[in-house]
Amino acid sequence: MSKSNVDVRNSVPDASASQAHQNANSLTQKLSEIRREREPEKDLWPGIEFAIISDKQKQQQDNHASRLQGAKATKSRRVYLAAAASVCLLVLIANMGFEYMAQHNTQSLIAKLSAEHQQQKQALLISVQDAVPATNNWQQQLADLDEAERAIKQALDEAPNNPALIKMLKHVYQQQLAIIERVHAPAWQQI
Image (tube, rainbow, N blue to C red):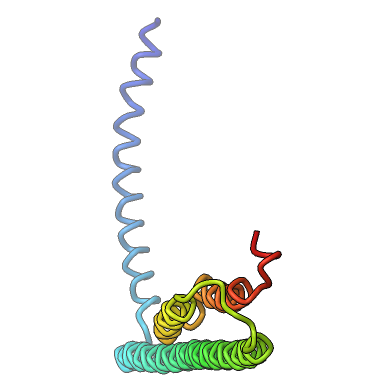
């Protein structure tokens, strides 16, 4: 490096310092001008205040709308719940109706079975009234089966849809008829 180069370097910082100072003053002046140019011509607070109030009113309207929408949703939920409750009630009533019909049908079936059995029993007793019975206690056996019939009918009053009880009642009726036939059968058939 030569001495002339060093001198140039030393002289440059002095010149740039004064130029930098001028630039800073120029920038400060320009900034102050810019600030004056950008100042609003009128007071902006009324507009800002209006925007804030409008925002609050819009928020209140939105809250009111959402409450109304919530009320509508609640109302529609109530409608759906009422419809579901109505359907459940209809199913319950229909089920009770079917149970009543089944019970009524069972009672009519039992009454029909009893009537048919009494007719068969009376016809059989009339047809064998002149025959001599093979045993003397056959009427006691019939009385025992009559007692069983009453007990089964009583149980059917409490559980009318019980098929096992209906089957037992039919079996008792068959046993009564079988006793009458066996007791009054001719001697050659009893062997």
